[in-house]
Structures are given as structure tokens and as C-alpha cells.
Image (cartoon, rainbow, N blue to C red; front, side, top):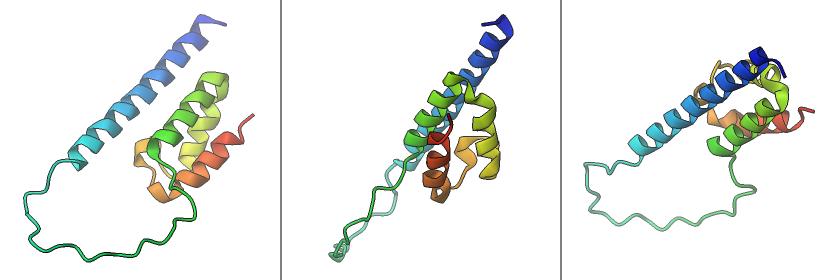
Length: 107
């Protein structure tokens, strides 16, 4: 493997790491306790059985990182662009399942 390809792989890994760190920071900010206290008891809501678990950012990130390490970096970037963003953290959550399916189809 040439040195340039190795360096490109390192750069891709650093981008993945940066995206992961950004996701962790956003998750921490999102988990801060709310300042308003709820005095009312929430009404019991009947939960319908979810058809399937929603795809998480971490699942998509792991799959894309794996594909990138296998040499599909260009294809991974094309998939991100297909779903409207240059970075995974900028893609809407509703597109995670489709993006994951497309990524798993890379061979």
C-alpha cells in the first residue's frame, strides 16, 4: 500500500473520529437536565410496539467507518452527499436507515 493511500486512510479515520467526538458532545449537551420542573404526573400513554428499532447515529457511523477502512472511502463520501450533507452529523435522522442499507450494500 502506498504512503499516500495510508495517509488518506489516516485522514479518513481522523474525520470519523471528529464526527464521533461531535456526536458525543451533542449527546452530552442534549442530556443536561431541564431547568423547568414538572409538577404534574405525565399521563400514562399506551405504547404501541415499535415495528423496528430506529437506526442510531452510532450504528451508521460504525458501518461507514468499517466500509471506509475497507477501501470504500470515496463511495462512503458519495453516500453522504446523496443524503444531502458532507458529514454524517449533518444528515437527518430519518435518513439513517436508508443510508445504513446503502452502506451495507457496498462490496
